[in-house]
Length: 269
Image (cartoon, rainbow, N blue to C red; front, side, top):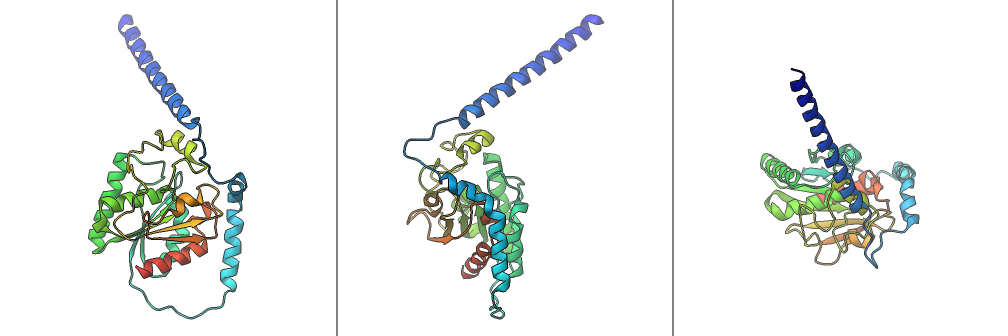
């Protein structure tokens, strides 16, 4: 009896030790990904712009004050109601994009989030679930969706549109690094640490700069302290239209000027 108990305890200990060893190996692997050197000649936004991200709440407060003081120009013409899906940025929850959602709903559009919770990076399973959700919602709505992706969420939006263009009316990216070197930003090391794979070997979309076969608009900002403006603006042929905004990278999720631009874009397409 005692021998059986001892054997069982030894087995549990061995299993626990194996799990700890696997965990240590995974931590070491991700740590090595996070410590990779940046390629020569590739740069993200300057540190001044990075620190400028801390001004996001003040920037929003000032923009909202200006909007409140602006004269009312009367009711705008009614536009067709569109189904819109909001896709959050890396490391963020869909709740961060609620201000944009409320603005679009006030304009008469039907807004939903991507349904996958926090965005900690892509996997084949998550991408398949997102594709299924987009196709199902487009079928339910009776028309294709407008996909609005913030930062990494824009990569998801572009790739979904490439696979299911029949379910997507328009793709709008906001501060999304779809063009140029994938390390031309200040978040790639954190991305590799958390997502667990190299930015050069993502589980979805190898040619991220290829334009989806649907209208594609890139919102970018020279004030972006996370993603290189060149990467989020893109080049001709990688998107249909690039529109500069005056906000931080974090500001894309809630800035009133971004909300106003989204309302115009959704109405136009």
